[in-house]
Image 1: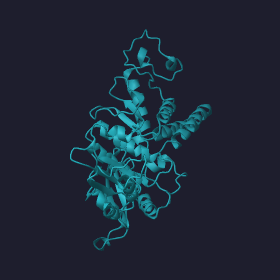
Image 2: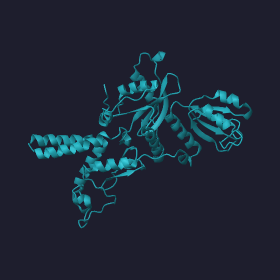
Image 3: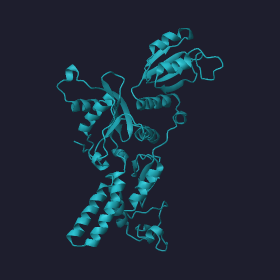
Image 4: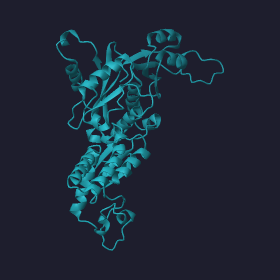
Length: 392
């Protein structure tokens, strides 16, 4: 992973420092065989190595490895995200049992729909289960509080159970406050048939899968039908429910979606002149980077920009996490970057058919290359972004 390697001799430190770039990089300092390496990332490799390998200052308490290092390995990076992703890969290989503590990753909060349960329910989790189960997860959310609020506010529109126990329906069971408020079908005391409960779960899953659009369409259709039937009170009540739903959906981040539908491409500054880097996102897992040249090469002058983008993305092998833990780590890195206040780079997510918003992507490549901020998408709803629509 760190493809550049230089020997280090204290007497010849000036030659090494002159050879390494004064730019961002991930590096490893290695000593004698069997010694633990020092691995980190930096915004300026030359300055960082000067501090770590230069002659120590008398009485200084700063870390100095001048007498312990024999080899310097490094790889320049074009962005902070690339540095973080590469550092994760290097630490995972070097410290398979301790890399998690070194990275301090916080797993992404998710809404999980437990479809394996006889009476499905939703919960908040940061853990992904096995891939063989029927349960599905939605996210990533910025915080657990945000995930809990979205799940709670969403379930207010349905009558799926909120309890966490495995149910053994008993007509003698008194129920809970949700059943008393008519906010639950109460399968716990057979307040509904199993088929009726399954139909409600199907509605909930459709709501989460579509980012709430299925319920918005359902309420709008019911309101219009009630109005056509001159049932104005019922139409007003449905309109009120629709007004209550809209703020919930407009505040939902574009990133939040069903995890196995979380596909897209991230664009970051690159290290190659005249190019940007692509990172491919498949079900929340990250692969790349791959350099994409802004200018046409001689053999590609007949290709459009969109065709070259698709060709480059197709050449990136999709990430295939070997475990649920690795998938959670990729999602944590993605969530850490996406919800940063000073996010650098842009991401473009595929719609429900897997198609990327190519017009927006091409414009985004130009902005990232020039170092400009992302376009103002405040007037575009998350639902429009999910469906691939763009500002024109």
